[in-house]
Length: 443
Image (cartoon, one colour):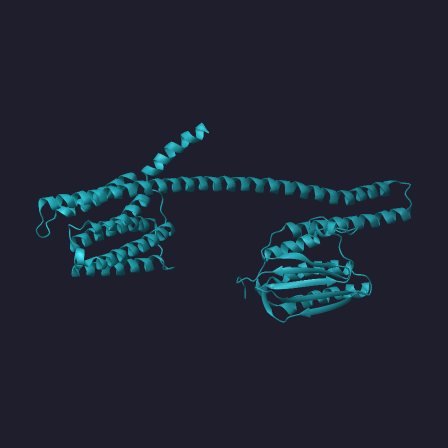
């Protein structure tokens, strides 16, 4: 705790001494609030002047014109700052932040002089530039601004206006000095509050930086862990066919092996070699990150090709194919989407009993994009299996690689979507491939 307290003191003193970084977004918020405050103060002063006109006299024409012009200027500044097309660079923001303080000080001095140099109540307009200087300037800049404000507040009293006795001038000087002390207190309080805000902002930035570093480290560790799990899964999948091939070769090399056994062994070699080849191709398809080539395609064309490809296999299994599709255009990569749908459809066929039905459908999504669905009338998936759908190398098939759904999900994610198990009930298992709308189209 002592170490933290010791570090806070110098940091706070440093933040109180130097001006904080001010970008245009922060300037816009600050200046908009200060403009509204200044407009409220000017409106209040004019209302009070009208209310106490028997005591303070009529507001001079020149002062009224100055108030009207300043109102118009402030409204114009507010419109300029809050225009979406307005953007100031670092240098423009720096100059604007300081020129607005100068303009407010100059206007307060001018209107005090035009109304009556002896009337110090218009010096309250100096509060707005005091607050702005306390927030934006360094300690030296704030001290210089306060010196100018105090000098003008007190000095205007001594500018001859009409005929006043020295005693009246001294009384007005005392009142102006008292008002100046209030300005100093306001500047000090605002500066302390601003310092605390800057400290909290610095702490927040440090915390965000630490969180970002921690996130990056966790991502790296998770990536390494994922690589380890993937390597373990590949080794597990490769081990079985390699073992079978090694055993078959050893059997075939024995002189006493009968010809019919040797022929059976050669069949095993071919089957396991094909299995390794399929595993390699599936893994490469899963690992390869090929960005989708978007183009305008009809939903009916994308789904119709898949239905045609699976129809022959469906007839062999005694499964009926039904399609329901909107004939609407959508932007996607037809080859990749058809590859993903073919994986889903083949899985659905194998999960459907003879005499069952496989339904393929496609429609436009609620917010654009598309939703492709593959629904079969097979048994519901157990929760333990449903939770692992799409996991690489997870399969319930005796000779499956477990990469079909993983590849389909990768394709869906590349299109800004996902594959979800929308329905999981006996006689109705429905997978949906959802893709989002995109403007990246290739003619």
